[in-house]
Amino acid sequence: MEPRKLSDNFSVAPQIEPEDVAKLAEMGFRTLITNRPDEEVDEEHSSAAMAKLAAKHGMNYHYLPYYPGEMTFDLVADYEAIMKSAPKPVFAYCRSGTRSSHLWGMSEAGKMDLDKIIETAAHAGYDHSSLIPVLKFYATRRGKIL
Image 1: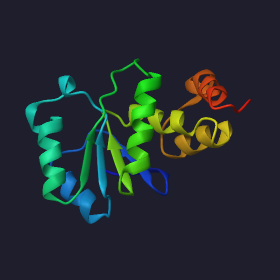
Image 2: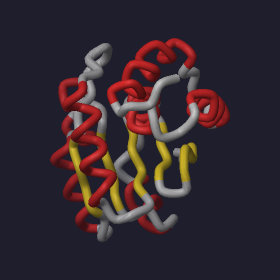
Image 3: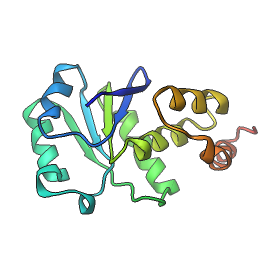
Image 4: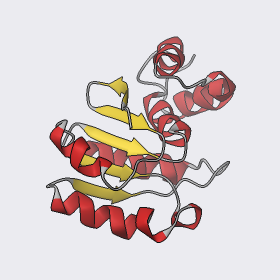
């Protein structure tokens, strides 16, 4: 498990193991977000199991399932609400980290330059180039014309 930093307050990674929760807490992460739906994992990796581990290690926990191909305005709004109130720094994961990084990118659309979103994601190992039309759309919803 190796966190991939997208901002000073947010990192992502592929699926973590239960024992990684203690390591994340030791690294200073204060909030854990699971973006991987429970239907994709076994009981040991379920949101209920991870929530218990997060609590055990003093971390705030949120289950925000992001089903492949189902990016919605509500999902992004829920992510933004979590990030607004969650103790920082925040660590999120899914199967590969891509969905978690997509939520970050969408939430930054209209606030951060599009090229910077793409560059930051690429530096963390995620190709967001296919999201450019959607990122532009989200930015225009925020009143920023790209």
